[in-house]
Amino acid sequence: MTGLSGLVRSEAVLLRRNPAVVLWVAVLPLVAAIVLGAIPATREPVKDLGGLSWFATYQPILLFFAVSILAVQALPDVLTKYREQGF
Image (cartoon, rainbow, N blue to C red; front, side):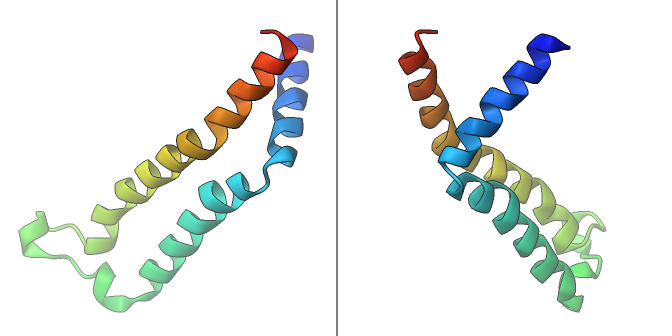
């Protein structure tokens, strides 16, 4: 557990360096899901979507968006820090 706690602590420090990552990766997709879920028309099943609602179809897209933004914004910062530390 010592190695894991050190890794979590190091990653938390990196996350504090770039707080915009939290906004783009966690807050924005969550707000988009809440807004889209609040619209009644998006929750109705659609025959063309195989009986799924538009909202249920859009959830994997939101997840992909969050992961891709994490890669685009956070990965360069992490790799730069690792390079500075000599990893």
